[in-house]
Amino acid sequence: MKTDEQYRFCVKALKEYVEDAGFSDVVIGLSGGIDSALVAVMCADAFGAGRVHGVLLPGPYSTPHSLEDAQELASNLGMEARVVSVCEPYEAFERALAEACGGELRGLAAENTQARCRMTCLMALSNAHGWMLVNTGNKSEAMMGYSTLYGDMAGAFAPLGGLYKTDVYAASRWRNAQAASSGQVPPIPERVLTKPPSAELSPDQEDEKSMGIDYATLDKLLLAHVEHGQDAAALKESGFAEGDVDRVLATVRATAFKRALEPPSPAGSFYGR
Image 1 (cartoon, helix red, strand yellow):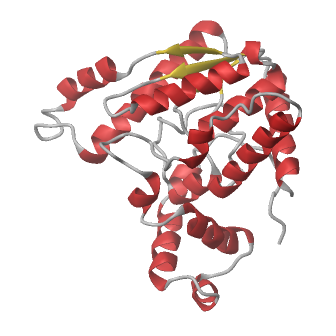
Image 2 (cartoon, rainbow, N blue to C red):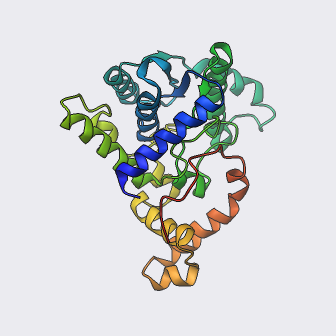
């Protein structure tokens, strides 16, 4: 599918899923990143901005620009956005778990606890107001297991679940261009499109550094392997670095248990063989 077709397909699937389930409103976490930004725009296109509720969930390592970008996005869309800090809940978990975790909550356990605090807040708002929580994950993250069980994997539907990260950027730029061509303010702030992706779960964390590969290379490799069936030998023969192939394919295999718990996403393939 072309970028515009992908975008419209995702919006249509989102709208049908939510309305078939009997919900009128949706809630999403606004991180200031590209994935949640595009999902917010899709939700506004599907339901109208008045039925979309954004939540900014700053934690210990959230940057000021992430909050600014999320607020600018919400303002551009004309949607509600509230702030619920997860610092206090996270600190409470730190205290409660320190002894059981060997004296300190640290490393991956500390990072994922932050993600789970955020999802607890979003699910509480979902339950309190009768809003469906929409997931903001993409296929690149799902294939690499770069997500938190019972954390950012939460949500009833994942409109980006069939799109790789580079396609998320392409769809975001396409949607901004559509707005500009009709005289509207492009909804997604330019900084969201240009800054390094980060989950902001540790100081100066960047997604590509954490995974050890840039998204452009990763997505080409995943497309060849997942969508076109190339095995390790074929990938190496086609020019991918041996280390990248071995590491990515091992990660894909090792994180299959996470993908079994991913929320549903638009049915059908975006990438023909």
